Length: 314
Image (cartoon, rainbow, N blue to C red; front, side, top):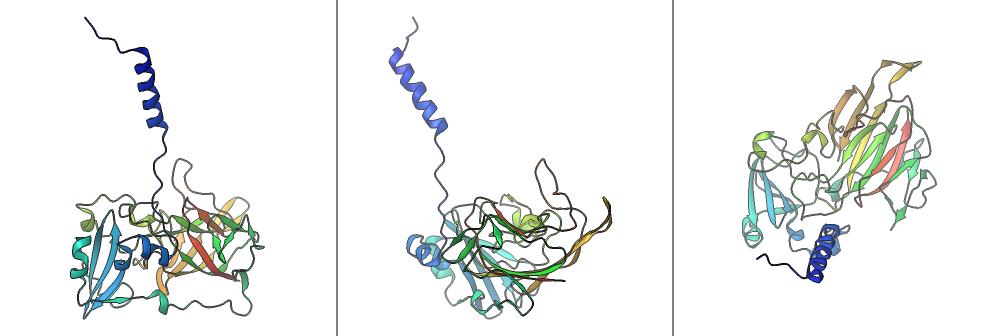
């Protein structure tokens, strides 16, 4: 004889299942300022760059542990000899001992953050978003998700950005601070938190690589990997300088390709790269190339913030 559940229990079971399936996942813990992160996250104080003699470390909190990248000679862009990067995982209860004898380094505090020179167009100085469509200011900072009202062609652009701290996500996860700066709305220089990551395939033998290096911070998205990973830790101010020459057209025919050079934190990471197309992924493919267009700052569901944006037209 088969046992039948009472109808009320069946109804309750289906209701519970439906509620479970429809429940939204808990939001990823996210911090947008260092003082709050230091109070609330036990790993934040260890995040950063360290030096001892000719050895340098980058320490990345990820999923409850710490991922260490170990360099010979110094840090990327500041003494690293370009050789193989070693890596190790360290638990929270062991990280203090592992860092004994190392001195923490704050390169962001020593960066040059120049004000707009004479002849430049100031797009954002913390006081107004009149130059931006749908622009939003929070605590004097421009929030991701806006584009310039002006159209540009050839230019030199300076801006500064800060990505949020999201230590519970895996390494190379696209939701770690994902944003981007688009020249003419068509060619993206990626902005994200890929601090401490190594593009060498050897570094990913035992770790799932979610996003490829040509989509990391500083990349010309999907088209060209940065010469060196110049990312500083999240919640540090960083700089991007972009020199861009637009494609030329005769009618609808492209007669010369767009070109781009990029400096991140003062270090050249793309040297006059010839853009074969617009950038973009997914089923829609690359963005159409254009002769002129806005500077677009992408909102990709992350509270990435910007300041001190100016441009010189060529």
